[in-house]
Length: 515
Image (cartoon, helix red, strand yellow):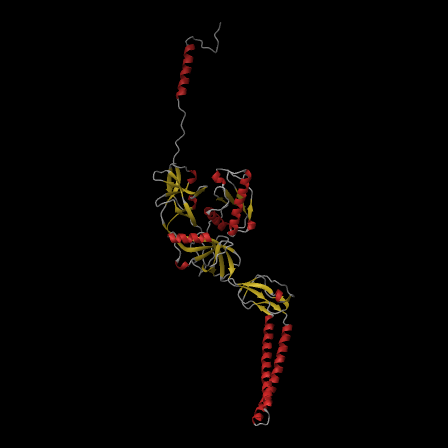
């Protein structure tokens, strides 16, 4: 019998081969799997905190108003011949705007002059008669009654002359009123009535001329904001300019600064119970007419200072449902999550009123990858290059080419989230501050703002839908009170009333600018 080709030919190999296979298997099982390379510390850029006096700029939504808006009205009744100005054009003081038919008024003037001449002739006769009567009465050639009659006729003739002279003056005025002129330099409005219309006291309004320089800038400060400012001044956290002389800058809709600064010239002492605000007014020169009445702008009040304040770059501050926080690189090179209390924005920075101290190393870039206690490799943060300077005209402030603070906010946020306390649709202080910052950015754009509300995860399905709707409505009402037009705000129902993420993240309203 021949051996099988699959078996070893030699009997000894039948023992050796299985033994070698077993040894190789044991050796293979004894090796450890290769370990992945150790992960190094996260590379982050940090800024070392240093307290300093920081100028404060308060930003408010404002509306322009002509310092003198004159209603042009017809002062006499008659037919309107023609309009002599271009609607919407800038007009000068004394420029003819409308011409009424002067012929009836010229006829009245001619009649008044004729009556004056008649009465003057009667006065001459009465004067001559009195002059003859006086000597004869002294010689007793005429009675005292004759003298009294001559004196009375003379005085009546004199009074009639004065009355006729007044009627001539009135007729001259009425004739002059048929040529309607602008009493001020300003921009004209449209003509209310058409040529050929009969003007009377019921339709005497013709147009409006609005003075362009100086221009008034009206804005409102809420009662809560005023009280907060008073408390911070009393506590020494805020220093106002001497005498309250703020420098008012005007920010146009494109983000550039108006080339002239102004000053606050009026503060309404009355509290507006409807809006919950106090109205302030700034006056600014507008010689070239760039600003027009009823235009929306933003005002920036400069002059206040926060002593010993802490400012961190905006990108260093993050937000969760529990509030704002920053990452700090501690002395051991570990990441530490530090809750902070934030205040106003300062250019590209954010004022921090609590949570940080001198010498803290705040992570600016790279914080998104960090976790509590993670090792970090810190390098100094290099701020970005400043924005291109915006110049001012002579007499406004700095000359052309002088760097100015960047507009606030630097860019319009495409998405903003506003968080609510559990179970309520009431805006707290933090939510109001977030909406105030958002409104300052949204007022200069024309895009729609989509508002979507979400609710807690603890209620019923129907209750969550209602709560999400009420929160969205509360945000909309607050935006409207801050100057955003209602037609620009659209309430959009969420796909899921409780949103995504944790319960803390679900208690919010999202604002999105429609592109």
